[in-house]
Image 1 (tube, rainbow, N blue to C red):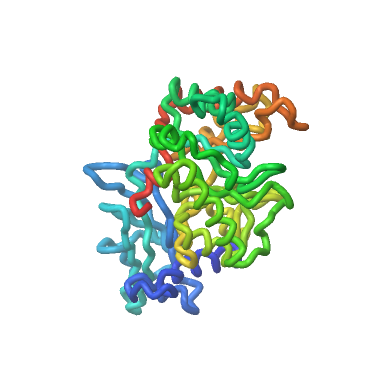
Image 2 (cartoon, rainbow, N blue to C red):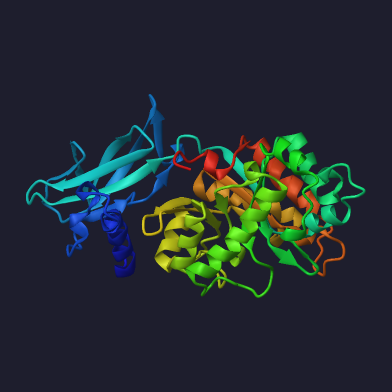
Length: 389
């Protein structure tokens, strides 16, 4: 394990204590002792049934702790076995929030972490769409003609997905585009939005499409201002029933202060790519080690901002039609089984007048959603899978 990775694991182990959550959550082994800390899981990890063995309303997981040879290490109430450079034991998770302690019996030194068991997460999927604004402009421009929001061709297609696969769809919204803002959006169909709140969620994405990476260096106040503008308009034209506490920020880049603003606006979950090798990792303020960890874990809670980060499985518009299923299948093969499948695309590729129009937009989306259904995944929003959301 390299030094940077080790420091990340140690820092994760003391993050809870820094937030004043009590001594039981402190990881004393991380304070100046690089020889005693949790390797796996680490503080803030969110585990599913595929991380262990589900049995009798509990989850049994393998726990690994770094400590020198010749120690007597007890993990919770069980003496751990020394295997190479680590001590290994099994821990039973009985509830959503679980504290795991490692005790050096020889010195009395204690290291502790908090991990979460996502009992309702595995075998679920969500379909989310970024950069949404044009379909709302069309509904407003045709408010005198449309009798339903589903006369809009884009929403008509989405409703077809829901009717066929019971898909739940999450729309991340811009506030404005050329010649239109959410303040112009008709509220004529507010009751219809509410009637479909069970499978339609709306949330903040950004003020507008350009410039790229608009919040990469933004202050708390700037992000909060733009976020509140979008949320206020969603509540006005669609109802608070459509508001969600999960989102993907435009380009997924933000300062820690900007993410704190999102959290204070009610967004508890931020989705992203978390690809440490990509020039555009869509990973907010996280460093390379944190991105790498999320890339393997899919869910992780950062106590510094009280935000849960979630990994998107596929960006559909980046795939050729015949590559959608193989890409998902490869992830299944690499990880044995994806715990939660977050399918994502961007709105503009739907339209023939867009410069990068994808004529097979519908086929790509339908193929991804059908793949999820055929592989036993059921529709569920992220917040429906996480207890404290």
